[in-house]
View 1: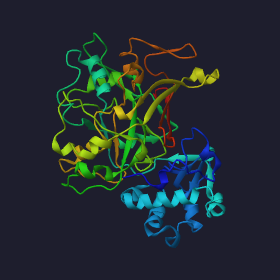
View 2 (view 1 turned 180 degrees about the vertical axis):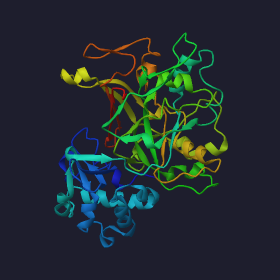
View 3 (view 1 turned 30 degrees about the vertical axis):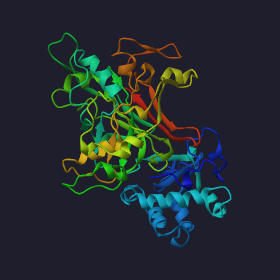
View 4 (view 1 turned 30 degrees about the horizontal axis):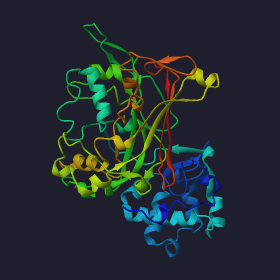
Length: 442
């Protein structure tokens, strides 16, 4: 992809809230979600965020705003796919149709557009909306792309060998559980599993006492590949629709007992929270940065390497974790930020994830989700989990309410936020992925 007129920082919208400083959803963003008005039995349908509103794509289609004669055939077909109750058809359509629709949306929502009078009635305030999972997610794979997270966690479990030998040679991943993925405003009961207490010879079945979050990005797959077909690194990003926030909740005590020899299972599969808005790769184009690998590290094998990836394979996405306890909510305390990092620190790129996932012929399908793994940076305040921030639960965090946390308590709400900003470009954001821990269900 390359920069085009939709990225122009001088563009403003006739939706005034989209022009406000710090808005997540200026006209340069235009992310997709599936929504309906809260408290109604309306059909879920696709929408595009603009400022504090949603452009209802089904309503916009009904006005004729995206007729082939005005928007072009590719944009019209993409608009029809985007207005559906799930975005799989839009994801499958490929980048040409999505790019044509983005251009049509940008022109329709710009200040001075002739379509303003037609589309004003198609806006729904975001505060009046509820969201569904934006696509039918057939499969979910969670990667481990942050070397800082992998090293910090490895030191807790394997002080003599924190990073396993294969980590620097290939993107490590495990297959997760798509049935337990839910959208922001997700609330779930504390999980129960087998736990082996320190000094005990036998495990017990008990609620997790070391419940944690993981700060990740979710990658929605666009066009898939046939069984047996590899996706080469040079075209891997063309198979990505866009990114969302993802919280892969983790029961660390359950995980510690079960993860050898086959990896995560019940410690991970009980809940995953994603943000409703999917930010397209095209919207993120201004925030690309070079991807680098230390000269002393193994260099990628040829199927994981390309000149384009080195020049602009990383993306500088600021990532934040915020927490609000039940007591903080009752006493009027706002959520407090626990950490801030950036996706530019990832050891493996989006394209490498896709290329490695399919090198054995594994078929990806439109709507599949890849998690990036916990995104931790090199500094202590950039850790993407409580396990790292509290050094395995040995150094509690103090909240503004005076409470302390080593791991999550019932009633805690975790909020993930992300945004991109740089000089010469307009800030774009991802909204929030918000989840709350409920008491264990007996």
